Length: 154
Image: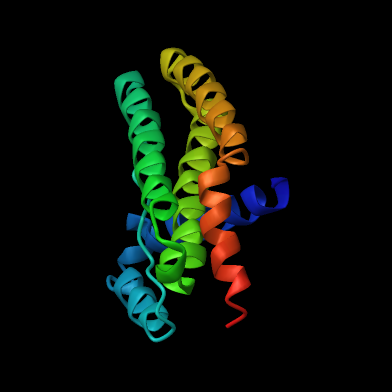
């Protein structure tokens, strides 16, 4: 996980440096060009939104947990005959990406925010998020959907 966080932070830093106003004078459309190049590979590149207030941190974690539970509930509700790669494996990957992005962003805020209240809130909310993440491994209903897909041997 630390290697993934390091890679994400490095990519975010490179993107921020590439799009900072001082560099934009020589090339105003670098982000747009980067996004266009990424689109060829069905990838989306965007600048992250960083929470700057403690209530934003709290809302982000609550939304991440609610969205994650909702998406997992959709997977768990699938009939075994209706499971496929898109609605099980890809859906799980998408959920993991969203959760990981929130976790990584708040970890950065926890360590670097100049506002002590925001740092403390990020620290506490990360505990809540990570505790919830541990519980995800015990979702037998989601496991059954993934197992049903695996049993199809497609």
